[in-house]
Image (cartoon, rainbow, N blue to C red; front, side, top):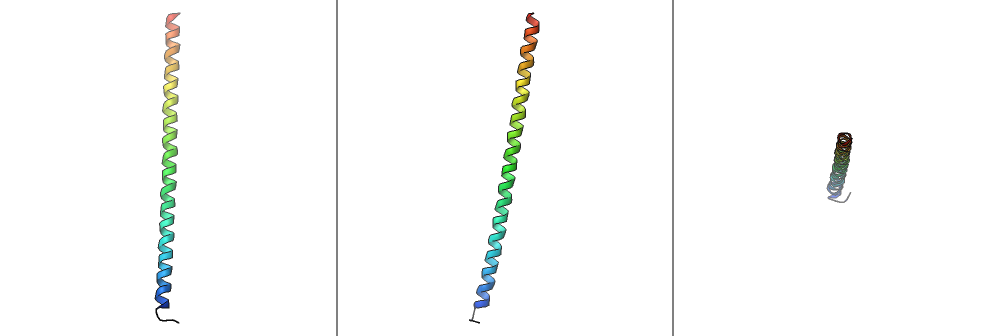
Length: 67
């Protein structure tokens, strides 16, 4: 063994592990953001659908009143 080799090896393994943990944390964060975006889009779609439904109901009411 070269002097200091085991220290270098330990440091290398530690850095590899830290890098892996950081990558996994970033991936989890990315997945969470994607999920939140999907939920926001779905909520927006529902609001638009409800709004459109109300508009149609109002049109129908007006049509009936005009008859």
